[in-house]
Length: 573
Image (cartoon, rainbow, N blue to C red):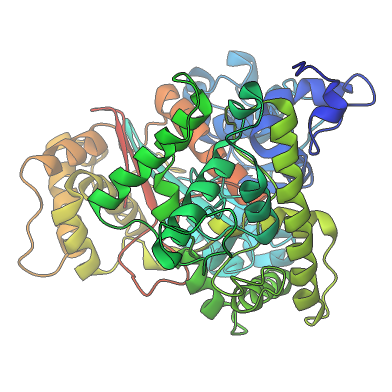
């Protein structure tokens, strides 16, 4: 048997490109494999404001400019000094000293990708908050690094909940960052779990095909290329008929089973696998070996994931920020209750997806199976679209296809306001201190230094003179600063809760050693982490940092990523 055939006819889901890829596709080839054309389009249309022009923020922007961010504005009214020239690789060394940090950094960043629009804004953020609030809300994402606490509070209040705010704090080799939003919907979560093949609830065409194959008389080569889903559907249906109608009845001549029941006990499952092995006509038929390995799919029930069920209730209300998404979820809920395209299993299922995993099979048999799945998927898509039409929203087919393809892994995440985690509720922090000791200690140390600056106990990052007539040498004494940090951190916790003896000295010691140091190594590491989360938010793909699932009643997550490059670890609170 000749299995070779032109690629155009070898699959129903892939078409040959009409010509060579264009320059943009070649430039962004690797990332297109991660977030596809839809994600790239979202990235290229995004507008981001970054405050101020530090080593960390320029590293973040580098990782957004390279993949093709649409527009960024870098805001900073300060000029470059010797320290900036020494730790920010995107400045032109000592040639930049005395010039605006924002403009010099933008010049360096724009050399990396001429397809990105970059603007330097040398206004003071405090003045903009007072005079141009509307302009700040025109951005999709605002990133703030080590911004003065009072300014940050005003900025967070202004942007909530319509604009994503990313807050980054760092000191020496320690850092944390968080993303602030009310709700974030993810259709393409890229979950590791695959959509169900419905082995235990086979649709009519698949069941009919599986039962029609003359396994005992068909060509031996064809027998060795039957896809494993077909083998499993056949074996399960025969098992069900035997259980319901008796082993004496000729299975292929008897009527169909009720479609219910699966092997449950260890003995039944062992016997079922032996049944699959007995179907082999040669000892080396790999497709049957694969079917035996995948036999668990016969007794793994096809159900709607609990998180998706929770979304049905969440988006029946009007609290959702996306009418389109809510309508899609509502239609999905209706579909799950009544799917006339699957007569035997009309409820409790999500729409079938046409994609199939790799499996041992000939091209001919694989394509035949894929056509069966695509035909059933198209029928169920029409049912879904009928439910969706009742919502009277305009949703294009591409969006519907993407939604149905990922309906088993939909996510709606909840975030927190900045004021809720600055530093966080006392009881919640106390609980985290016992379960996530290192992460919480680091978060408390960074929050403490921020509060001390806000109280003018130590100088803000913008000033070099000491406040409150306290001697600068006294302020910068490491031991004294550790005592100040400890006292401040204890005020964040309930009375009687002590700071951890092992972890707190490490965290407070590093913050006291370098309370305002923006180190190139930390900046580079943070640049990759934060940019990755920003891309997730913009493209609405993959799972960003969050305070948990929006449909869940649990409220024990802060949604903070903590970084420690002293001991080299990251963690989530």
